[in-house]
Length: 428
Ligand code: SF4
Image 1 (tube, protein in one colour):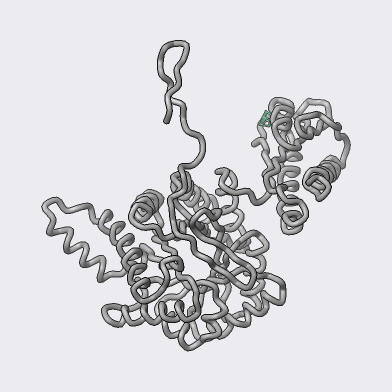
Image 2 (tube, rainbow, N blue to C red; image 1 turned 45 degrees about the horizontal axis):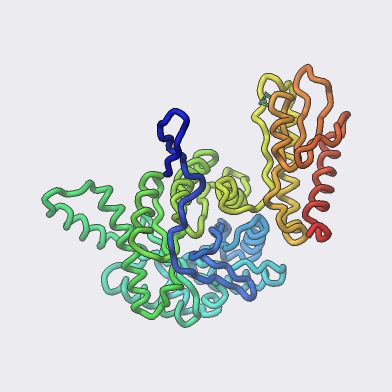
């Protein structure tokens, strides 16, 4: 915060705008062929997702990975839980390569990862990153041996590892030890605080163990996922203060629909604003028949609305009110947002910079012209009782007025022409 003087001789606090400087972390490379995704350091915050198909069904999994990648997921994680799944990983990778989808695949391992990665070296090679959960590897010496075996495979194949600790599968031996130590303190801490501490200790101590076993420090990413917003914020603040490994953010079991989106957004926004987090995944429970790509879109929208990255032109639309008697503007806003998103796989190569474009679709004259003028391109639809015409604004200037039954089609064409004119090759 800085102070500025005023005419009333009183200092006024001028708030700082924008996120804090990014927490300094190492930079980890996750690659497949020519496709290189950097996590940490000065790299943009990476969007990840996870499939929910049976990995043993190679075709279904490859199709979903493709959908997630086309939606914008920069790394896609697949569960590798059985020998059948491990055997099919290579088929999934080959199928994706044939389809021209070079997104790196991360393998999610629990309980038997040491066996699967050792018994299926082609699987170990086809994956670009391994997620290891130290809480799901047995206990005592067996746990240490299994962990060492997985790290040895990662070193041999030169793959980075995410050490992913989870509230629901926290190393119970570590937790029991820390709880015992806590009760002996003169002023024992709250049990929940000890659990949060155990998550952080588990992640960092396992990362250090992996380094002792030969895995480079710049091949390790950490996560400590919990399902409550305040716990997640506290855990990641602590983690960021205590290490410089890149951090994978995500609220686990965030839930379904708006609850999952709101909880994830609330937690991640606080951390991202503080400069904490190098890659994010939004763990939404899809509604029956829902689209898995929703989690990618939500992740992108969090980053874009915070001004951290740009993925797709954003549509500003008013909520509507009693001044609109129809859903025309809602339908147009939805149609334009869907159209823009669908064009992006092509547009991002043809029209660099288009992802930062703003489009306004407004319901009536009250805020319509003003908001449309602020956007790169905007339309102000007629509200109830207004003249049935829709002025269009381009770069702040009113250009044409649309009327009749084909306003949506005509506006879409205007947007299309504007994109080609402003972001096309001749504009550069
Ligand atoms: S712009 Fe008009 S229709 Fe939209 S919320 Fe404001 S007053 Fe209502």
